[in-house]
Image (cartoon, rainbow, N blue to C red; front, top):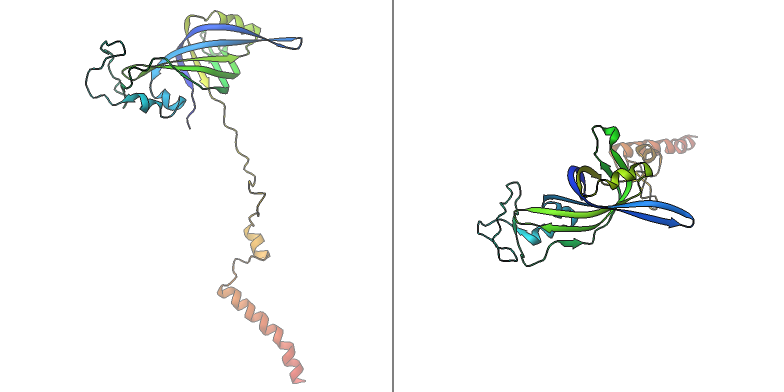
Amino acid sequence: MKMFEIDRELVKVRSVTNVPEFKGEKREHACSVKFEFQTDNTVLDVLEPGLRKAFYEKDNGKAKTNDEGQGELALPRQDLDLTQRKLPLVHMPLKLKKDFAGYRLVYHCGASEASEIKLGEVALSDFSVDMQPGGSVLVTFSSYSKPGADVQGRIDHMAQTEIEISLLPPEEKQTDLVDKGSKGSKKKTAAEKVGGDDDPFAGSDLARDAQDEQSEGDEQPDEAEATE
């Protein structure tokens, strides 16, 4: 399943809130930043599968009115299949119970990569979507992180400005490729099968010939005793 992410998108920083935390006598500084950006309605498939089809359908070419009775003038996007909004009486924005953890947040500020602000272990929450006619969606969410004192002041000054950011989802942990079925029987190698009870040639003509030769060898001493 595709995860929510942003790749060098221009977003608006609606607010920056410092969040002091106390752990005993130790005090830590955290930061909550509320972002807002506009994108196409396919983002709904990532945030909540089924939401886009519930609120959008194919444009039938007929004029629609919004919840205030006014005509919707937004032109449908040509790169989307579902652009006409349904259920116009549902009030927007729509809040989503979504929380993500372990993200990496990059503020692409300055003229070079050295001036970028990179934060790890970022938590995302408070998602809301304003589904608009024509297939566009205004997404709002909050990020929670613990930037150092050396960059906190720079983030504070971003409030009510637009800046390019990237949000990278946590990397999937590689599954342990060592035998997962250790609780059950372990598969034997070809060599083990040849040397063990499970003979891969059992029942074949080769196995029967070898068995006949062994039987003839076992009968030879008896013939010698009969001759004597």
